[in-house]
Image 1 (spheres, rainbow, N blue to C red):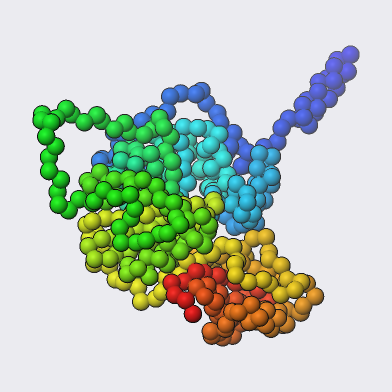
Image 2 (cartoon, one colour):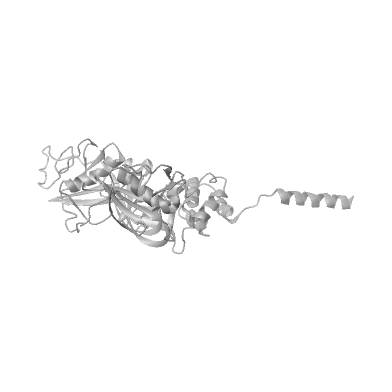
Length: 433
C-alpha cells in the first residue's frame, strides 16, 4: 500500500506540472506590471525644479525593434494578435512610428498597451522603469527624443519642445496643464488632448477697482472674424480665438476637401505671404510673413490628416521677421492621387510603400499583364493623353505637371532595375502652367 500511495503522489505531481502555465519572458514582464496592491499614484510636482516636467525613466541604449520582430511580438500575445505594425489602418501603426505618445500616468492597462505597441517591450528593464514612473500627472513618452522646454502661456495650448536623442524617455508633465499639448521638434510630433481632471483651472480675475476699462495698446491684434491679408473664399472659418497677450489670434479653417485645405498655403503665397524656410506645406507647421504680420499654418500628421481642418495663427508681432524666405515654391503633398487615371489593367496598392524624407507618401501601383520594363512607357502615354506634360526626368523617374498639380513617378527598385510596383509622389503647387 505504501508503494501504491507513493506512485499516486508521483502521478499527481506530474499532472500538475503538465497543467501549470508556461510564461515567456515578455509575459512575465507584463505580469510584473500588473502586480501589486492598487495605491493612489504619487505627484511629481515638487521634483521638476521649475522646468514644468520630470524625466522619470529613460534608456539611452534602447532601439526600436524591427518591423518583423514587432509583428511577431504582437502575434504572440492574444491581446494584440489582431494588430499589425505594417498596416496603416491598424491601431499598432502610429505608436510604432511616432516619436511621442500620450499616457495618463496611472492607468495600468494603457501602460501595458503602450509598451507593447511602441516597441519598448524590447527593453529588458521596461517593467521596473514604467512601474517607477507611476504619476498623478499625465505623461508623454518620447522615442528618439529628449525634452528641452515646456511653455504654457496660451490658455488653450501648451508646448513641449524636444530634441533628438537616442533611446526613450518617460516625461511627467508637472507644469500648468492646458486642454491641448503640442510636442514639437522642428515639426510637430503630435497634438494631444489632456484629461479634463488634469487641466489646470483658470483663476478667476480679481475684481477691477474701476469700471473704466484700460486703453488697449495700439499694437494689439484687431478684432476680426477672418484672418488678415488672406482671402479664403468658400472656406468655413471659426470665430477668432485670442492669444492671452492680445498680440495674436487663432482660427480653424475647413475648405471642404483635402486638396482645398492644402490650397490655403497656395493661396497665401499667391497673395504676397513669404514662406519661411522650414517644413514643406502639409508636413507639420509652416511659417509665413507679410509686412508686420506673421502667420503659421498647421496640418495634422495623424488620422485622417489633410482632410482635417487647418489651424491658422496670426501675430501682430514680427516673431519670424528674421527668418530666411524659401526660394522654392512650396509643395503641398497629397495622400490620395488625383487628376489622372492609371493605364488599363493597373491599380493602386492598398498602402504607401514608403515616405520621402519630408513626409510625402510614396503611392505604389502595379499593372497586371505588363512586364516591368513596359510600365513606364504605358504610364507616360496615359498621362500625356490626360493633358499632363513631362517637365524633366532622369534615370528611373519622370516629373509631370498639370495646372497646379505636380507629380514625380519612379519606375525602378532599390537595385536600379525596372520595378513591378512603381510609385508616385503627388502635390499641389503654388503656380499654374
